[in-house]
Image 1 (cartoon, rainbow, N blue to C red):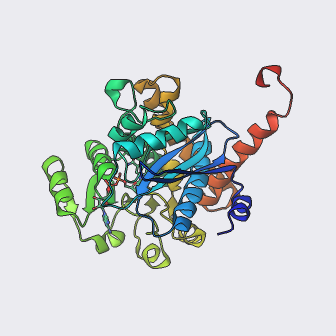
Image 2: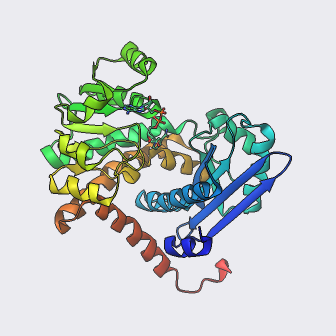
Length: 358
Ligand code: NAI
């Protein structure tokens, strides 16, 4: 990959490569855009097949974080960190702390949070070396596990979609099909079940299904059947790239609204949903609850305030659906417009000189 050309194409600000022989650290931090505030993003630790693959992942995710933070109304930019780590090598204290020192060196331009391959406990280890980390344990004044808050935001987004389609946001007697009942999907099922929705779920992991069954009543279908079930809402809460021409044509739901990242195989998939008259809640907007919650740590974590902001995703999704309806554009396009508009506007209003900033 020609790095600077790729950065130009993505309009990315900065890439940091970090290495520490003793800790076995081989990492990349991508800072995409800090117009709105410091970059925030997850730390992924996984065995990438190549350095290029790791770099592409970091750049792509950092750009997605810029859009997510902007659409959520947060004063944050987009960033992402990836550590290339063989599974046998594991996450040592040295690795996490060595990486923490690199984050500290960025002086607050980038805040790290958990992501694939990392946990709240890992964030605690990193916090020994840097102040610029969020998603710490609640007992330390942190915001804790983001999955519960992500589910809360998805729940509010589903309500906004129901309001748009049926003129009523109530869940009672609505049928919701959930693909994947892991950390977010299970919590979403609980919230929906409490409000009287009928649940249909699929998950290849039988332990997850058993766990769900100990708490909730749900119809269980095979993973490849979940797309085609009769329901009002299809909620993808497992994998990315699942909305393809083939799966979209099988959908009976009027609404697609779930937590999974990168649900659309590509932009054409979003166009196809729009053409079929299916309301799609853009993933990076509806699943921002975890980020909104973690961002709250920057000003001293207060759960009531965090919940209030997450509940507000109802209105953000409503705004996007309205934009889509008024302009006749797919919702994923409307969401991108909303996010980019906010970044451009804030960049513009900052053109006057303020002495305190210099
Ligand atoms: P998880 O790993 O806890 O759960 C995913 C579940 O999906 C697992 O139970 C897995 O067995 C199941 N699954 C895998 N393949 C499947 C298939 N073909 N059909 C049905 N189920 C399948 O992950 P988590 O944390 O619940 O995240 C779910 C999605 O939401 C991911 O795409 C993640 O990136 C996204 N997300 C998660 C957030 C979080 O805070 N955990 C925040 C925002 C987005």
